[in-house]
Length: 210
Image 1 (tube, rainbow, N blue to C red):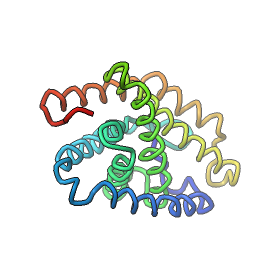
Image 2: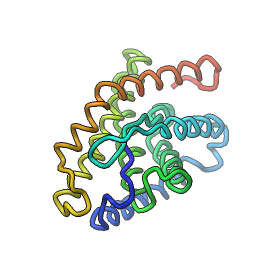
Image 3: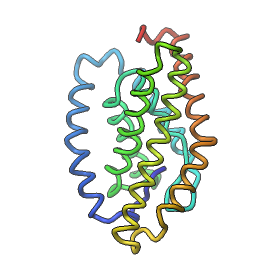
């Protein structure tokens, strides 16, 4: 659900950068110091996987794309701050080398896909993990991708209200075009991906009890 460059005006992108910049600094300092050395191989591998699965973007009406995110697992295993930094790196690389998203909208995409979505996944995971780890992981990933998708749709809808010249498609069209595939297909696949990845890491004994 990348927002491409040119779809959002500075009225939205500049405040997003102002909000994201201190959050990036805080999350990086808190989660990637010397004490995080042991977790870096797993974090790096999961970030690389997220980069791959997000590269499979399906254009949808309304100015964006539909795809998996693959970052709910980072929030579940560590915390939303780790997911935010890693997803931001993925988005930066995609913008620089593959034209996915863009630099001006990087903060908007990062806040939606790297913070709000994984944050919702983490909260759902914590609420359900005592019932079943697999159920909690699936539900967390499913909820997370819906929150990320709806957040992007809301931003595009706000831009339409502010200036249809930037975003001519109304919110109703954008929301339906994005949420229908997300609710019916992508959320399920994201949940299965998260459950399978968690099980693989457990089997490989790369994780302790959480």
